[in-house]
Image 1 (spheres, rainbow, N blue to C red):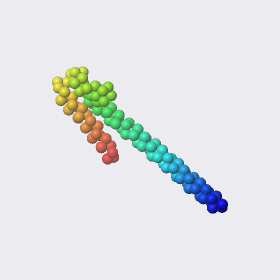
Image 2: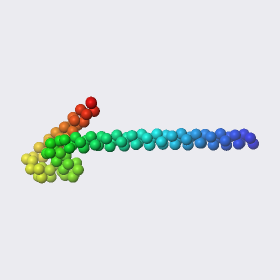
Image 3: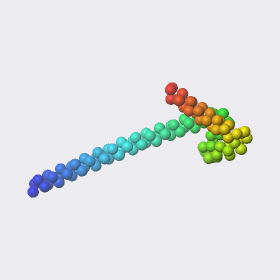
Image 4: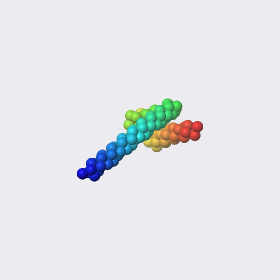
Length: 108
């Protein structure tokens, strides 16, 4: 009879330690999640700053394409480009400018 109580006590202790370990893991995951969220927000701010520093034409292109969701032919018409290819090249150049600036910031 005493063994049964010891077994129940032992099983309860194991369950409690598993619960405690699970709670500690959840707390750790929440801390990592919060750090990840903060890092994402910092990166987002950096990207927005870089977009603001672009020449107006490139900034306008990016906003029309990625914020307003306009297609390349629509952008071509609204900004009076001569071809779809010219719009694509300008978009590519603007993205490359942002990428290069961000890489240079990370090196600092």
